[in-house]
Length: 251
Image 1 (spheres, helix red, strand yellow):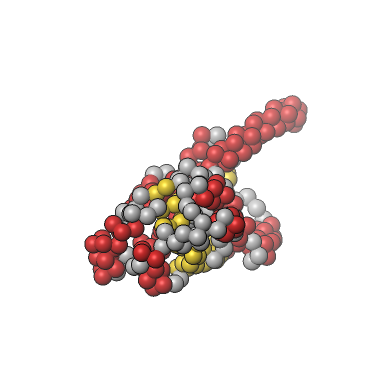
Image 2 (cartoon, rainbow, N blue to C red):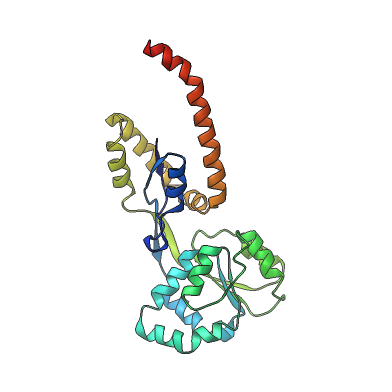
């Protein structure tokens, strides 16, 4: 059975995509089509703030994209040199809070030491930060996306822990999404009218649901595995129920 996954594929350097791998174990043939694209903004402002670690109590990262923004900044030789010579060491005297293992690995790639990677979501990370930070201390620098959730900022604000947010990327619909969907469905056993109707419905939904898709994409792989196991069991049950009717049709 074929499955269409509307998500970005995992980086090739880090091995096969876990969703493709897990679906394959259950006999599903999966295809990935990227739904979102990211536009990085305010990079000069980001590096200006990174150039003054003395003004902050630490860093907070809840998205790998925020680390991508830092990596883009460091591609310039002068900025990379400043980071390597002194800024990295100065930031390493302060905590770099992260929400999960994927983000933690990217923090390590830029030379920092992550904390809180086992928290798994913004709410638990906020609790972790509150257990370590004192009210009215130096602000934590929080590079984030335009569609960030307000859970973490709200919790820290209620506890009196300063947080300075800086939007460093925007989330938009992937430019090749419509073309990729058309190409995929043209290879399946559907009538042209069915394909066109699906694309119309999808386009209408996606215009107001980028945030929803983004949040869905951040669901944990463990939850996906549980859902997949349930679906597989249901399909097996359905096949058993349909077996007598198929036998009658073949006679």
